[in-house]
Each structure stands twice: as C-alpha cells, then as structure tokens.
Image 1 (cartoon, rainbow, N blue to C red):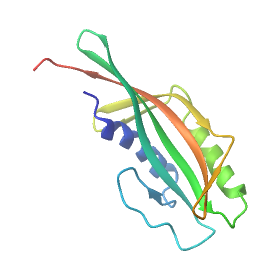
Image 2: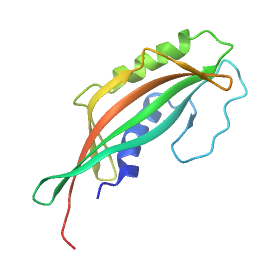
Image 3: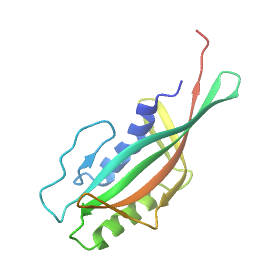
Image 4: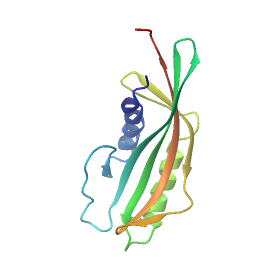
Length: 139
C-alpha cells in the first residue's frame, strides 16, 4: 500500500522550504486565514488517483496534490498569480522529492487559467501530479 501521507509530505516540505513565510491550510489540519487582507496563503489537498500492481510485488501510486494560492478578494490578483507561477515552475516534470524513505516524481504541474472566489478569498489552483512506487512484500 502507498503511504499517501509521506508522499504528500515530500511535496509539502519543498513548498515549506521555498516559501517558509507563507502559511497554509495543510491537508487534514484546521487553519485560520491571516488577518492581514494583503497576505497570501496556501490551501493543500491530496487526491489519490490510482494504485496498481505494475510488476511482481511492485505497486505504483498516482495522485494529485493541489495547492490553491489564496488571498483576500479585495486585492488585485498580481501577487497571487506571481506566486502561483513560481509554484508551478518549482515542480517541473521529472523532479524528485523524498520524505522518510518515500520518493515521489512529478509527472506534471499545471496552474489553472481560471480562479474562483470562495467566501471572501481568491483561489488560484496549482495541480501537481505525482507518481510513487512501493515494494509490496507479501505478508
């Protein structure tokens, strides 16, 4: 079985290393958006797509990890769009990231050309499609 939490943390740790000052609503955790209406923040969501046997005792996992770059809807989108482009550029196809023995490879990273307004926040989604493998030892 794929440890999706470790796969997610491999990507999240890179986000935190590159943008340590930007807070986030990390998948599965509660979060209060910043009071500063100029602030940017991330919203993370893990979406496993598939797990399949690709060789004897080898399981491949595919998932999408989405980060929404968010800011107060009263702001212009320039800063949020600039950050979304930087995130998309950071996760180039073929990039590898590891957390606690779990390695993931980026298949592709796409920044949505559309945004949405939710409550009072602009949301600009970036979708990172990852692939990971695990040796499935018979029990």
